[in-house]
Length: 184
Image 1 (cartoon, rainbow, N blue to C red):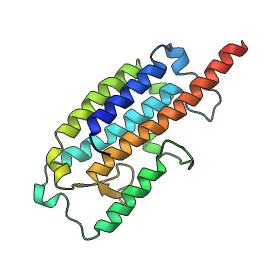
Image 2: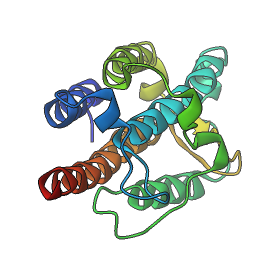
Image 3: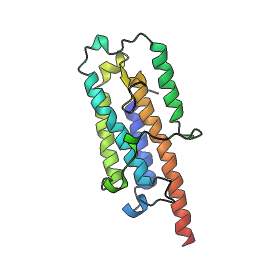
């Protein structure tokens, strides 16, 4: 997957297309206590994506000839591929998120969809500023667990793919919301 910025725009449009007409109450509706609301899914994505920003900024301070240096590139590739498959949109594999990425519904931001759209502008800017890092195969660690390392390009693929996963999850909540509305 390349052209990360285009993929981010596609994700933004998909979220807006499905959820932009919903009220804040509908966005925050939960079918049960174990299921995240649409807004929580979106907030979760913002939290995760933003957790990468300080790491990417730190990478920019490292001399470019050192950003891709590792003794175990095959392990880096395997880890990235494993995480990428774990966040696939098909959601065959249920995964529990790291505590640092769990959205707090009490502290949720106001108009979460438009915040998400603005957040995507920042994410695209981070990608543009990372062109040299991407060309040199920069390696980054997971913001949640420093033992997971993968290339920066894979990190952007993980972010984009993970958003698609949560789009599907949020669409399932929307379907349940519609069923509830029909039943009433």
